[in-house]
Length: 428
Image (cartoon, rainbow, N blue to C red; front, side, top):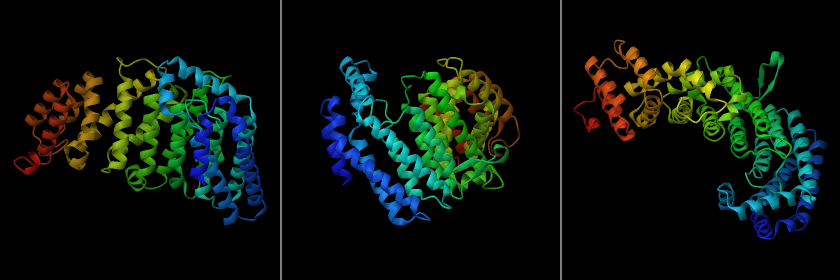
């Protein structure tokens, strides 16, 4: 049935935008009526009865199928972003058609249904994970750069994700300390992914500016970072152990922040320094965990941050913040990276560590040169098998190269030395 709905939507999308509302009206009206019945059944039951939840999930998935079919192709979006006049004109015309039509009533009704269902889930001792994920997917399916017939107002989408976060992950408690749900770590990744999607494709509403949009997103991003850091801290006695136990949570929060740095770095200007500093502290500990799920996204995040923190990078409102973070945490990132190369991590993780180290050298040569001299002057660091001559050669060759391929080879050679594997098959 979902495939049928998606196929119908694709046929509608092929018609002129001013016909979409009329063509979709029978389906949207029937779905909205069914969703209202489902929520009423859910409300009348004393607990989350399986038939009521299942029916609501089924109807939300049909909405999601329609939304997928109504998405303009990536090629249209890319042409519009590249300045193609025809694509830009078509998308602008579609936006006007969607704004003032029966589709507007459907969007308002859908948001009301989702909000009511969320309130009901809040009252449950154990919210249904599948229903929560389905509600998020329904909202996310219409979040696009290009106009979408089902797209909710941006501020409403962000607010809904924030309310869902309170139900599924953590809500503010006394003294604003977060009160975590029983299964927060399982539900956290889907919400982090939703925030990532909003940050990537969000464009200002007609009555908003880009800065206002970033402020709205920044508040949600800051809350997610603070709660994830606090949540992991309560999972175990130390952060490395917590990250090793919950690597998926660590992976998704760093994936989100990497996406923000790559596509919307100005967003961080609306996040307090203390919040981003907590994330950087988490990254130091994540670098110490010999787990690919933990280390790889952390290394990507730090590589993006280091690139944007350099004085040669294109300036953004977040540049001063990122530069101060490099000064504050750079020595710890470098120490953790060298320890991993020196044998603390499996050799399979060397490419990620080499990429991170190369980014440090490329964008902050002088400070890395100073910090490496201090670190490698310590006896037995990063390994008792590397003598002073090997360390000097490593630093000299690494700081002189401008080739990433060569840098990887230098890191590998030094790691072989630190692991005392010279003359073995691993050194080949």
